Image (cartoon, rainbow, N blue to C red):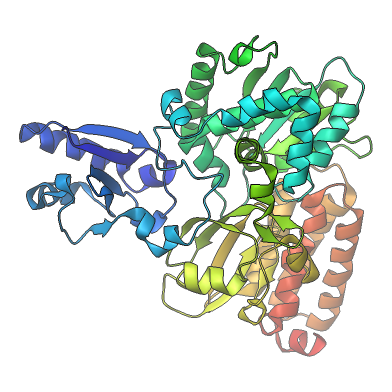
Length: 516
């Protein structure tokens, strides 16, 4: 039997040499007259082991990593094509604690299948969800999604079933599905991993959404900074059209659905749903005032479902396995699983999919292994650049929407960025305001001017100029931004700023500590 190797084509693996490792293995095996088969997969999400090469054996896949081109001759000498011992051998990846503790639902196929093979996708359960949706019909499909408890994974956490039902009930000859893949938050990569590692799940989810609400056209809006994801998704979409998974008669039914890929121009604000719609319509990415909601008047003035990519990629599994299976997982009103993305100064960075309910401390210290530097963890930012900073004293916080909101935090898109005890929290607060000033669309005054004035006030605090008065000013400014901004960019910027001030007053000067 020809040895089969699995090597990720995921951007995280490519960034640390996966292409060079693949070429080295091909060259060395050719020189030795060894026949092999290489399957390029997505990543399993264990980024500290990338590039990880897996070899298919009688005992399952055996992983080796992180592999460099220089390791290849020694690996072949040791017999790694048969899964033999080697210092880089990690054993069966699914037996590693980082993977074995996960509840992989949405990301079950990532790192397992050839992401561009429709046959591989179907062999691993793909398109069972669409078949069930076709049998249930639109109303039954919406009810199934609603009963699952799925909430938007892009940040807002709005119930997906409610959004779909609203669009389904809106009278219109034309409706749209928009998949928001403009993943701009720092420390997040779940969208990219799915686009590169399991794109057919995204296509299937968008198609089910179209069937459910009566939409015949969908768009996926991908950020331009993801060239590998764009290429992978475009190839998968072509394959879907060629095999009647997209087009006029999907799976032999009377239902037709078309999907178009659109690439953004790099504006963070276009991750906000109404700015995204403006961009899709060929306009400058600026936030729209609400109401009307996009569900009533969205893309080109028509009722539109806008869902995050992870939300849509989760739908096929819900339909295939039933709402109850998904709803049985989780904590409180946060049902199902969440792809937690560990980044920053963390020992075991990567994607950890788990049911809601783990504590923040379990995620950072146990699963993430603490900091990569070995120094104490001082802060964790949850929910992207506009998320709050949590100190270790709050690590007992359960990872769910309501628990985070109770402590003025956001789960957001599931990103966690870890900092050790050398971080300057005053400068992190400044960065949040500077980021907002740079990325603001400029439409509303609280965001446009408040962020710029905020940078100036923080600079005075850092310089030790009348810290108490300036702290009072920054708090007032944050209040204005939080409740006066048109969208979450200005409205959420106060979260990192005020959490840094309240939880780390010592970094804002002695007077700041007294004022707190």
